[in-house]
Length: 276
Ligand SMILES: NC(=O)C1=CN([C@@H]2O[C@H](COP(=O)(O)OP(=O)(O)OC[C@H]3O[C@@H](n4cnc5c(N)ncnc54)[C@H](O)[C@@H]3O)[C@@H](O)[C@H]2O)C=CC1
Ligand SMILES: [Mg+2]
Ligand SMILES: [Zn+2]
Image (cartoon, rainbow, N blue to C red; front, side, top):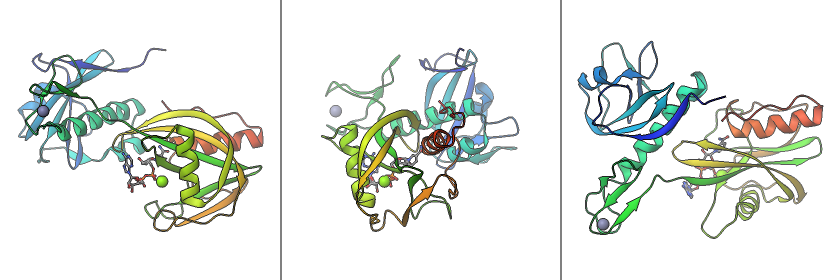
């Protein structure tokens, strides 16, 4: 099956195509969704910071208008990326997730981190460039480990104070310089719940554009310790039986996938597929 959406670096001097508009309030949308005819969108009263050609959707070029601030466009509203993930068409969410990462990165790399001068967008390459330093900055991706710790029919799930009331999820955390994926996973589980793990098994990965994580998902077995929650980060953590699970994270997240796969295996059900 060919993908409906492919990323590309497009020349912004070419006319036509679709465009999405992103402001600090989220993406612009109307009854037809978040993709607008580009020429129409550029005629609206928008405060454009930068334009990026980001790829092809069903063969049509797609551009991002990154805005300084939101403005009123008749018949339209603004909505955050998370809402598109939860409600929208998965392909459109992927377009917007990519647009958000490119917009954030380009906005935060307008000046050289080495000499402080203005950087320029490199034609035909996804990079910002400082000529005096001959320095290129590429989009940033932050590797994060996410793990379901298991003990037979039980799984270890935790709550962060930021979660929706009642929801429990898998443990996660960012890799630090010097760490392997496994080192990071072991450290994060120790820091967050003081549990030791063994038999770490890689399960799959997911781009998580909030704002630029690359989630690497694992299962790991309990090897020892009693749950002690990390102050401020973990509000509660418990062993839950696969027959009595609490409210879980959104179905498109890799957190949910890691839980659903394990439960399916224990119960002998068909395994779910990780959304791309
Ligand atoms: N797709 C999914 O199913 C899930 C994704 N996640 C994501 O995993 C990531 C890590 O999860 P949490 O530990 O809960 O996140 P977090 O936001 O609580 O991060 C913990 C701490 O790490 C530090 N930090 C923030 N950004 C960093 C970076 N780029 N590199 C290194 N350190 C950084 C900060 O001190 C922050 O307080 C987050 O992006 C979160 O959104 C978390 C759970 C489920
Ligand atoms: Mg964490
Ligand atoms: Zn420089």
